[in-house]
Image (cartoon, rainbow over all chains, first blue to last red; front, top):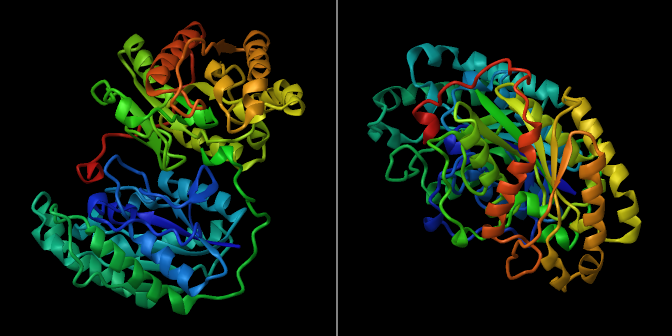
Length: 251
Length: 251
């Protein structure tokens, strides 16, 4: 049995934790998985290979925590996050949205989709975007849940890091990120089957834009704690299991 | 304008060229691209990240040669190859087939699909598979072309390496690979809009299973030479262009 989670958002969802700073990935005796070409592989880094500099991500420790709490299942991540993207690029009909639906549907053939992990907002740090953010988020998630036939699929959203105040390449991010955080917090309170996870106290890479490997390790644990109350044992079973990989498939 | 190619097959399509043996990737001033999440990024390794040990692939030098011959376009690879897979895992309705269709369709929104690069067969080195191979290949490619609305889409297929005779982990591969090569060669002669590329003289990694980085560099050039006669200037234009990536999307 495999429980899966869709990972979407921008670079801090994809993960830019520096590989040389990260602890080795513990795949819990191959129980942690990642989707590749619609099939489950033993999890490996980078989990979400959207860019050449993709690194560790919060889904790693999230999946580990989930696997500790659910020792009888495999846990698989469906990596669809894409760096630097605004929420308008995630609206239904956009390529990122459609890719996420495609990937989740392929994953659902051999797993039970249990939730969505969302981290995004740095790209929307301007007043005209901030006022539209909640509505856009609702449109994205309502439609995603509808397309996947899971109207109560839990969504966990994470806050932006306070280190952004020191991000000098695009000063509007440092100015407006607290307003996005306020919207994200409100989403966690008001949007159904959703929770907000604070990024308080988490550190950044030297770029002051991306969570560090250490921060992502902690953030994934927070995501799991926020997810836990939503866990239900009544999800639809997949139509098939993937089966064991052949010897050749491991080469 | 972006011309794209779908890369499918098993591990020698995905590419296992050792990164430490490979020359740096020349992306021709960012004209070589790779699809990630349905969007075009500057090409980076591994182009086809199906496994943790994925390496260089033949599509790199193929795309470079194409870009030399067509200096006015970008060239994008749609990486959907999956290591160790048999051709029956590529039949219509299978997850690998459906993933390839999904990815190609997303790519076609912002590119003109110009061909399919196929390398596969090591997984089918048994008499009962060999006799079905041509028919299965026909079913895969006929259906793929139909699903993509391009009945004359060129398909280039490459032969298996003679080093397989020394692959001792699964001796049936060393025994039967010449028979698969005979079928692949016949496919190149008899299947419409298709050509066969010999792997003669190409070297392997120490595993005697995978083409070396040097071999893949040469193999991609051979693939391009085999593709060249199929080039037509009459392909359908995509409905949109992706547009430039924002500063944040490059981080």
